[in-house]
Each structure stands twice: as C-alpha cells, then as structure tokens.
Length: 278
Image 1 (cartoon, one colour):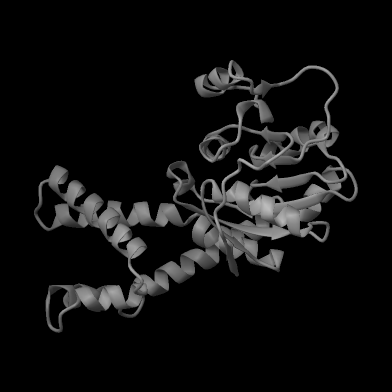
Image 2 (image 1 turned 90 degrees about the vertical axis):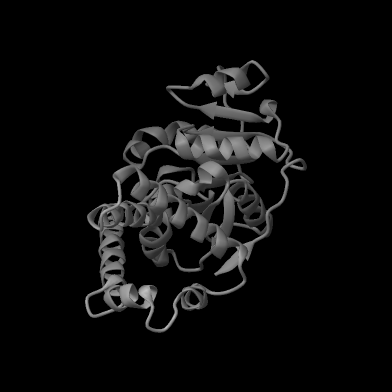
C-alpha cells in the first residue's frame, strides 16, 4: 500500500457530481468545500436533501438539475449499495471520456460498476470509514485499468478531504480492508463499551465507569496518533513487570484472548464481505 498526500481542491476545474449526500457523502462534501471547492462546481443527486444541501443550493450548488446532463470531471457515488441497480443508470449521462468515477459503495465491485456504466469508464472503488465525519477517516482505493495518473491524483485528493488514503493493486484485498478499517470503528466502540461494563462489575458507578472508559480510549487513540512509536511499544511502555497492567494483559493476551478473538472477527467480516459482493 502507498499513502496519498492531502492536497487542496482549489485547482479543480470542471464539475463534480455527488450521488448520495448521506453521512459519508455529506462528510466528503464538507471536506471538499473546506479545501476550496466552490458550491457552483458541484451537482448533488439526493432524494432527501438536508438543510445544509438546501442552503448550499442557494449559494450555487445544483440540486437535481433540470435539462440535459453534461459530462462531469468526476462523479462520486455514495448511495447505499442496495440501491445501486436503480441509482447507477441515470449517472451514465454524466460519464464522459475523461470522467473519473469514484465509488464508495461497500461491496460493489469494479466489475459491477463497469457493467452498470458506459464502456471504458475510468473507475476507482474506495472504502472509507466513519471517522471521516471529523476528517480523521482512512480510505483504501483500487483502480481499474482505465485510470490515468491524473485520475489517480484526483481520486486521492477527493478522498483526502475526509482523512488519509491508501491504494491497493489487488481488488481482492478490499474485503479484508472492509473488515479491518471499514468495520473497525465498531470494534473500538465495543472496546469502550466493554471497558465501561467491566468497570461497573469491578464496583465503579456506571456514569464514572463510562466516562473513564470513553476518555481512556479516545486519549490513548490520540496518543497513538501523535506518536512515532508502534502500538506494541506503546503497550509495553504502559506495562510494568508484575503490575496491574501485566495482570490484565495476561488474561487478554492468553490462549483464546484478545488477539485470537479479533483475528476470528476480522476473518468472519472478510468472509461476509465476499458473500455480499457475490
């Protein structure tokens, strides 16, 4: 994998079409605007636009434009995957010879997209995750054979608006990506939930246990984010031989412990991702 460098979008010329402005599509839209994209460069196709989208429409954003569609510089598909068979055909009118099609639909493969869009479309499939809502997500992307260097740079810039970007050369890896980083925030939230419940079982008041768990998880994550040390070293730095942390880790790292359970969980999620993709 190779990380992409975040860049502003002020030099973007042309029109960007966003199909689906829900949580993830909306987060991307916020990021693009923050990076210099103008509302009048954006077309949004969203059956239930929120107040923010309607306000942007008054500033020049095009919402469900009337008349003949023209080819866009880029189309970002952020609709729910189950609606894809109905949502994709109308987007064909926006696909020109140089249009980038960037899909963030979970489970929908490049082959599916190629069959649903005009022949020869330049397509990138990406998997972001929910910390995108605060600009701290991470996306992993895969490109079809039609993607040029400029397409790749544009896709990286569009995704960088919601966090870091990685690329893979094998689409088969996207199932494991989905299991690890796509579903990963749920694992972290479960950790905080389980820590709070364990604190209650150990005798703490529920409200205090919840606050301690929440702040410990978020603070530790921020420490890891800012540190150059790997997670194993950070863990070791907290662990004194024969101390309380070591006693807890003897349980968590023992047979059938945390590593084993999380490995099995991610294998299960990877398998399910493959099943959903068909």
